[in-house]
Length: 208
Image 1 (cartoon, one colour):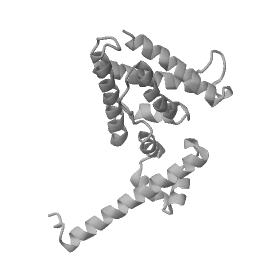
Image 2: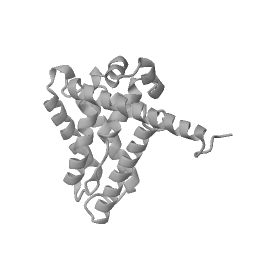
Image 3: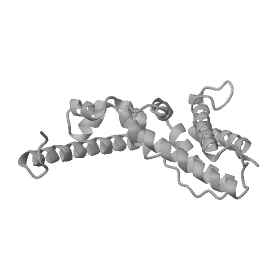
Image 4: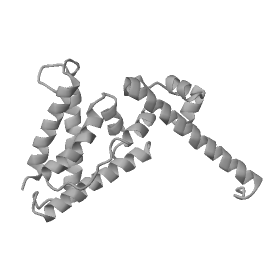
């Protein structure tokens, strides 16, 4: 039988839950600080645990592996702000998502790992679903105003835009210029290349 919320046992349960939430928040804050200083690639379980002031085992009690922690950080960067009045407006709202996915090599693989039917990182999955729905809603509004093609359904076009976003991020990360290693191309140029590709693809998809 579960302890009553007003019983001593219930109070202990609530205290444990509060400590667990606090510890998780400290781990996330520590990881965010490390990423701000050295990028996502600098995040290691040992470093995060040390900065949070907990044992390494505590890290793995909250996150099965580093990717799950990165998923928690990335979901904060993949929120779409609706309200696009035209295709350029839509692209301007997609640009921060592209930068979040293409600025560091760790980002896109984590998002791809936990996209679709994966439930290993439910918060990230929920964010991607919500973001896709928001893009679809903007496209529906643009369709109603005759600013984009009238078909297919806005939900399908929103899913397609998300796919194009992931593709553009992948090209910016791994193939920004023919015959040139991505590591040899400055980040600003890779992001510009990704933005140009995304623009061309979205225009081809949505232009009336």
